[in-house]
Amino acid sequence: MRIRGNILLILHSLLLILLSSCRGDVVVYPSENEQHGESVSGEFLGFYLLNEGNMGSNKSTLDYYDFSTATYTRNIYSERNPHVPLSLGDVGNDLKIYGGRMYAVINVSNKIEVMTADSARRIGQIDIPNCRYLCFDGGYGYITSYAGPVQIGRQHAQLGYVARFDTATLQIVDTCIVGYQPDGVVVANGKLYVANSGGYMLPDYETEISVVRLSDFKEEKRIEVAPNLHYVMPDRYDRLWVSARGNYNSRPSRLYCIDLKTETVVDSVPMPVDNFCIEGDSLFFFGQQFNWETLEDERVFGIVNVKTRELLTENFINDDRVFQKPYGIAVNPMSGDIYLTDAKDYVTPGMLYCIGPEGKIKWEVRTGDIPAHFAFRKKTL
Image 1 (cartoon, helix red, strand yellow):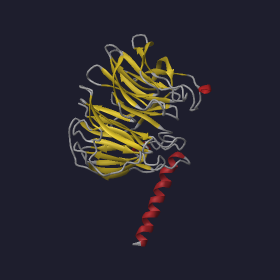
Image 2 (cartoon, one colour):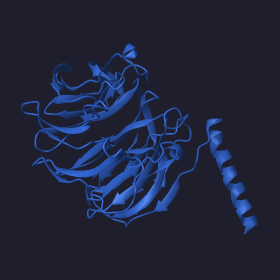
Image 3 (cartoon, one colour):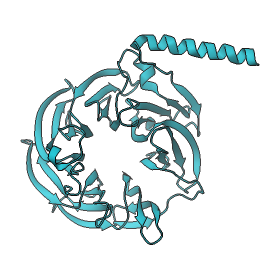
Image 4 (cartoon, helix red, strand yellow):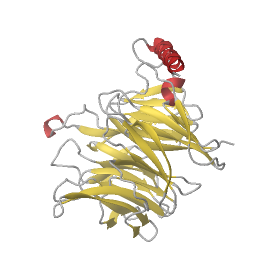
């Protein structure tokens, strides 16, 4: 048994050497497969999961779960693109599929990595400084940018912008200045809604959504919401849902609802919100805040009915599992299963949990470092 183990170790080492020769000093680790869950077929073929990787470590990776085979594959980008120097790069911040292509926002590497949606093979890149979040409409992509380097402090601050790029040519065709450190962005009713955070300017955070006309790509107005805005997503009732991190003191993290007809805040959810997603009429979120009375962090895993704006539950998990650092969330559009990631200690591999509609964990799998952003792959006709 020991001889066999030594032979396997030698073969594994030779494989790493062979793969690393494609990139000089950079080791390309092979992908790994695991079976989890049950095989299903339907409108969606599977999902990609972008692992952020700790800042400065150049460890952003891409995983894939195949619904038809119930197979989870880690680190597919590195293996399928061994010729790309430094692989995906430093800090994966967003992931979207549009028009048969997949776009990975790599924040500190100052680029959008463009791949084929079916195989994750590299097509090219779009250079954007300190890029953050993506959305698409009418053959164009829209990406928010902090514009300047990663530096905390008002003295370093400069206004951010949204860049519009042609998805056919991958060329930037226009830019629009918005607020400081813009994050989430979405297209609705012929306009672009941008969540300005002011995240580098603590304690003087931004509090407004920038409204940008797509017709001439100019900022039209701003909507006052709350400090340190983050994600913004539309529902199917002409409303936007926006998360605010708050100022970590007198203004706690909250979720806000904006009526697109009046472009004003019409409701809020009195719960901390770190991340959320919307599927159908349900908004799934999680968050935590420190309780100064108990001196402990209080966590919530909630569901909001976006039609009635009613909080349905403060805990959609009916399981004893303890989550160290809940980080990413998505919902399977076919089964209703909830995918929740745990970043653990931020420097070692995280975990992905599949939670059934009844709240029980169905399966779990190890991911890359800081698992964060999902993109579901649809069947093409």
